[in-house]
Amino acid sequence: MRYRLKELPPSDRPREKLLELGAENLTDSELLAILLRTGTSGKNAVDLARELLNHFKGVDNLSKASVEELSSFKGLGKAKAITLKAAFELSKRVKVSRNRKITSPEEAYEVLKPFSHKETEHFGILTLNRKGFLINVHVVSIGGTGKAAVSPKEVFNPAVRDLAEAIILFHNHPSGDPTPSREDVKITEKLRGAGELLGIEVLDHIILGKESFTSLKGEGLV
Image (cartoon, rainbow, N blue to C red):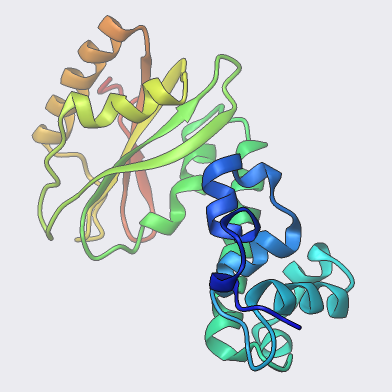
């Protein structure tokens, strides 16, 4: 007899198990079941996940499958296939990013390109370890079509959590023109001062246009 997940004891339910034991202690099928959320007729989400992994011969092959291949699997459907594809893509981006050393504004720009075409202003930071390897990308403020307001607390909270030795500030100009404003220079100076107090160096401020960028360090403005 197959049970619905809610009929299983809490210790056997993937979500409850993750909360109690941590994600690292779940099997591939249990993690996949959380993304799937529901099963299908006669199968709970874990059963469906297990069959999916068996069909694709493991999570690596599953991660490479197209939306069409995923949605053709009986019981999955397009919505779940899109969810899985998005999750695998995020995982791939994190893996690539964390193996990347940032030694120039151009290398920082390569990481930040996805923010270039945002219609609203996104202000954030790249956190780096002492060897200059990227730890994470954090968006700390999202504004309207104008300036996104930021405070030192918002900026440095994620840097402290990441145990970062240095950060690179960034934000996009929805107008498409990456020319720095007076306000851009002022906020950079303010955040550099806050960073000195915390022992976290502000290396640069990258301003993103639609097709290009400006480095305040490269322009001699920091």
